[in-house]
Length: 596
Image (cartoon, rainbow, N blue to C red; front, side, top):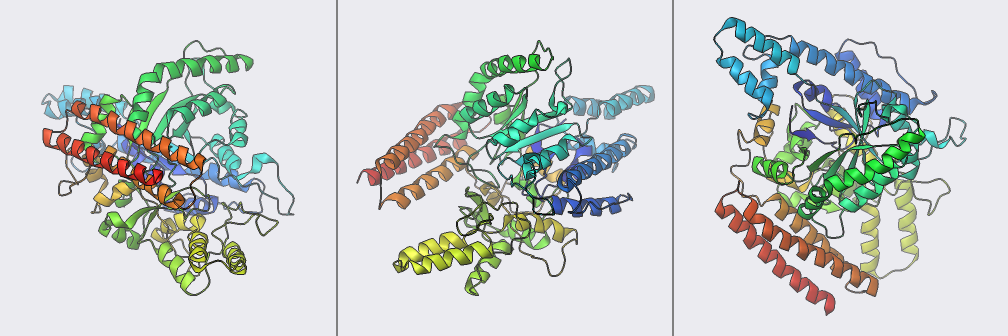
């Protein structure tokens, strides 16, 4: 029904978004990483919906997987009830079914039929059209996300190591596979062979004779090459990728997986040009794998291509859909300002609404060792600085989803934990480093923050589920694009903005999304140059030179693309060209710095 979806937002910000928007035909993605927060949300929504809640405790067998299954089944029931009520509501002002059609794009076929029905005066014809409309309603998907590399191995209550299928990611996968959902699993954060090898143990991911799936796999990717490598690996195992979800490497929320200078526009162009070639190559491998499972499929299943990361206006959205022929777009961070759709506590919501560009930055604060989009006004950042000032840096580590470091301990610990940071700082002090070098390394150690708690806390605060003595530090990871959105919006307003019915950014001078991403990459490149100015190796110099060449190639591509942006006026296109020229000149100066 809709040409956009709401991607996963942190651990908790979109964990129940499907229950809020799916009955309106809007698809969204819930994280299934934090089973402790999920269990609390299952209790909350069970009681809200007059359902019996039976807790699943941590000392029970396979508790993580079962918690996820039960929560997803609950979401499914809630959405089905809401959708059924909506379908049977009258076509009158203020009803749910009327809102469903109001939210649709004015070009959606069902919306056109709805408008035709409203204009019909014949009662019999109107009744027939109303029935057509009710039968044409479609729910949005309840999709789920797993960060592939958040995959801690676990032990039982006796301290004995559990088999691989009880690792965090594998248990989450099993929880989804055993649920009643007809939906998709979004795999992000790169390739995890253990998890990928576990996928083909579940028949729910296999097609029927028509190539349809009960459960599908979506692969979130940042470039064509990585998409092909991962998809071929899975195709050989009989796993079909139903959608490639292309995300900007830096102009996105959450963890940022920067490419080696490859920009979103050229990446989309490559997917557009090679789409059929990609399908053909994957289907050949897939057919062979299915034959080994005694499944014969003559035609390739559907394969969607979508894009997300930094989209801010209806014109940008429509250009992506039309020029690159993508099947849908993803709008994530702007929905953090939509309380009807996401879980943001009031303090954080106020801070987001009042923030400017300087409040959003790419950091090294994630214990995963991956760049992370951070927010200076978050209470977790304030808490981090207060702990340093008190001489107690680091966080208590309770959930342990991100434990990985064994530098000082036999058991892995998290680099954001108080335990690790204390041990590391003691080591730094023993080295008698020059003051500047010590401070740089101290800052690098204490920059890490707890994301296991932080990315769920806001959700628990909003619903009154956080205990008085629990950590109240809220971490949030909006994309830099949110800097231009400065007002809390209703669901109707945000959707209307996406479809160009209203403009929430009419008062803002905002660069095009491609320019925004390019600026982020140039900043990333310059930081890398500055970091290595004192110790340039041949390998690093070659890498930076290739990075710069890709940026310049991207600029050349955008120069040829601008004239094709016919949904933008001449002044807009001229300003884009001026900005590209200015950025290009700056890159030449940066190259001189490397060669000096």
